[in-house]
Image (cartoon, rainbow, N blue to C red; front, side, top):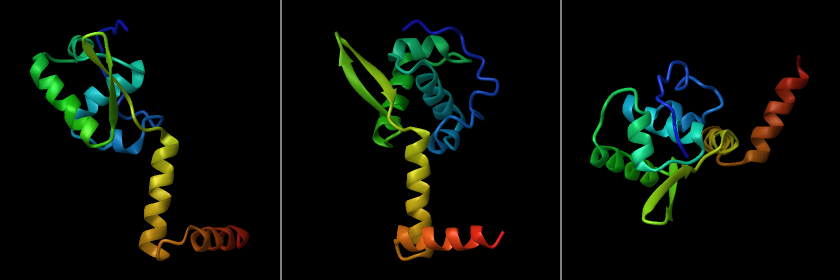
Length: 123
């Protein structure tokens, strides 16, 4: 899982990243983006890939916060945790659609879909 030094230019604006990753604060976004780009990494690998120096304990703390937020998941590999992406763009779209239905259609995805279909047929 060797990671190269990461400049992150354009990476955090990558539309392929889930929305929840793109809206994180700068440092958490950088760390999550490293995991999503590499598909899996340990805390040591993240430290090496960061654009600026951050100690391992701080990175582990942020990784654990990202796990708690549901952005990342982790698994044990030997003696180290390996962090993995927990979301896909499809997950983000589904979450947004559910929130839209909750906000405007009392939670009914069917009514939301009917309204979108009706709007689309007016074109």
